[in-house]
Length: 69
Image (cartoon, helix red, strand yellow):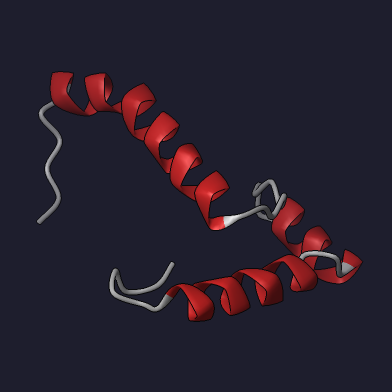
């Protein structure tokens, strides 16, 4: 994640560093230990994942009238 006006070149550099870090077996094991699914990918992959998760959980959030303060 980065601020919305972050230049594309910086996003690409951060994405490359994150994907490189995710190649570490120690880091991957740490994520798995806490229940995360490390997979890396592009910033477009992340945006698509967030969109899918938002569509998936929005009905439940609305039905329970959940709010974030």
